[in-house]
Length: 140
Image (cartoon, rainbow, N blue to C red; front, side):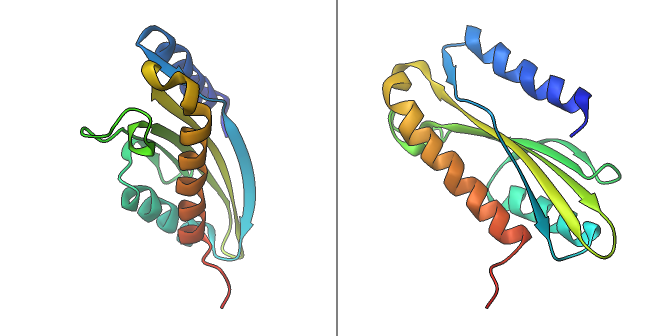
């Protein structure tokens, strides 16, 4: 991931400190995929849209997708629907194969600070798992 993208992502984490939100830790991972870079990028974009992310930045040339899945408007405090999930995907590779780097975190309303680490981290993990399965479906 490029330094400028990490700075933007990190700045968003700091900005939430003043808004009545609690931010979780940033998680990063890199995984190889068996499809071309272009196919992996298309699958990643499809996965982000399927998970109802608001796409903040798309750069197909650089293989970058960043987005936020905002909390549901009618979600109860303490439920997974009250958590925001932020995600940045960087797809690199060539026609023979690709590699997908992910950076993700969660943000929760301050009133659910005590349970946010459990509830929102679980939601972030489940969302990321579904995104990864769309990019690289399990072998059958």
